[in-house]
Amino acid sequence: MILPFEPEQPAQFAFRIVEASGANVWYSAIVASQATEAIAAEIARVANGIQSDSAVVERVVSAETFERAVHGSTCRIWIGTGFECFDESAWSRLDRDRTRLERAPAQTDSTIVVLVMSAESYGKLQSSAPNLASWIGGSVFHVAPELLLSSDARAARLNELRLWGSMSDADVVRSATEGTLPADPYFAEWLVLLDRGDLLGDS
Amino acid sequence: MTRRERFRSYIASVDPATNPLTAIERGFYVGPPGAIANQIVGRFEIEPTARQLIVGGIGSGKTTQLLVCKNSLNETSDIIASYVDVSSNQDLEKLRPGCLLAIASRELLKCTDNIDESLSQRVSSWAEGYIDPSRGYYEEEDVDLFVPGIISAPEPDWASIAQSHVDDLKAIVETLLADGKHPVLLFDSMDRMSDNAAFSNIVREDVAALHACGIGAVLVGPIRSLEGFGRIDADRFDHLHIQAPIDVRTDAEGCRFLESVLERRAKEGILSDDGRPELVRWSGGVLRDLMSLAKLAGEEAYLDGAEAITVVHARRAADRFGRSLLIGLRQDELDRLKQVHASGRFVQVSPSDIALIATRRVLAYREQTGTYAVHPAIGPLLADVGSSL
Image: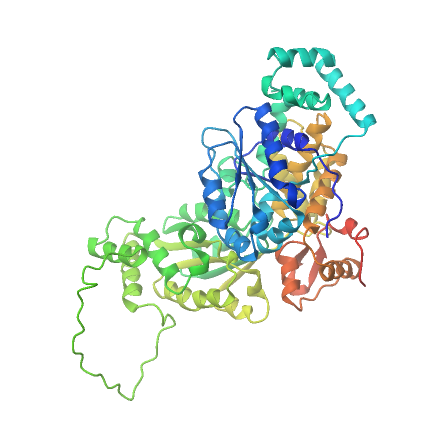
């Protein structure tokens, strides 16, 4: 059972995690079970577009590989998939070993772990690994790939961004193309809303 | 400081997964009313070998209290205290009688230089293992058959632990006592043990042996230590401390404390005066949930373009938090939550009831008097959930 969350697009979720800050930050992205890999890749693509080389995606196959991957990663944002194969005992083990899942910031000021999984898998995590779930807390987001903002909402948001940046849509696209757009997540959101997410890596 | 920097700094300060040690070092600790750290320290000051048990829900601040306790005890001239996260030293699933004793021996060896090398070596071999050169070459020798006498001496409580290991630990303690220091060990994370029998065995054997060696000990135990047969485990301790959530419905002093926790972390007016009590209200008095809500509300305000976190952001955060707590619940559990929410009554009758408490869907404010409540972030959402009742 899951009450409907207001869904976010992968790009919106990516802005959120890039902006996150803290020594040991955990998120979960709830997605359709057949879409975990694709959405994780899209989140990483946008995150790396906003902040280069900030995110990596890894598929884990067991509690052991998950522990090793999280602990061993030097990337600021570690995005994991593969949790659909975790049973209750795997989550219980991770719950007991929660301390070992703590990532110490290395070169970066913060480290972020994102678990991309189905609602069913998150339910297992919550019941079998309540200590780990408490690290995630309410940072659980429903991420849907094909979601489009209503045209009114999109227009309203674009208007806010134009006021904020004192620029036109054309100015933003031109700056992104020329590689002079400041590395600010609001500009990245602006490009995505203009359907020019392809320019993210260039700005 | 730009708006972005202000929010990033705030969000980092309320991250619910931050190591409590880091939070203390950053000056974020605020002592709760009736802090159990003070009670534990007080007990050790008059009874240095006391056995103390802490039981409390996830995210209630147990580790923080232990760390504060350690710092306070080490300011006492005749006590030396060590904090041990057992799960960092030992696979909790393989925890068996003797493990705590071995961890204790290893920790206390770090506290003195006046230990005989052979004793130190024995402890290390026992705790970490060693290569036995005789293995593989051993030939069975003739052994005279021993015929037991009629008198059987009573076995100590630590029947599974070789007496020699207890004697070694006692020798380390005697060295510390000769230096004028009573050793105290604070064992964290054992509340994550899922094997009830294993926890009972540890309590029966290791805690008894630690006490016999003259060591004061604090264990963080599982919630079921307060229920049914688990109560026998709790009875083996001299003092039981319950770290319950703060009942935000009735405890005004507790609410002020929770607000002061937020004030300590939220600088420069980023959290509005009306947003603060709103976050406290929805947290249900669970410290880590308060942090989680504060973080979510900060993200909402930032993405909203606001300069400060308001009631609106707090309520949005509570809604999201409540929905995440509902994920994975079965229909019978939802029905149970509705029943508790409507009646305000909760009697634990099944493992599934204990699970509702362990996962914070139900908050146990005062278990002895049966004061329970559905987590406030879930309450308003229950009306939207289908029922089989």
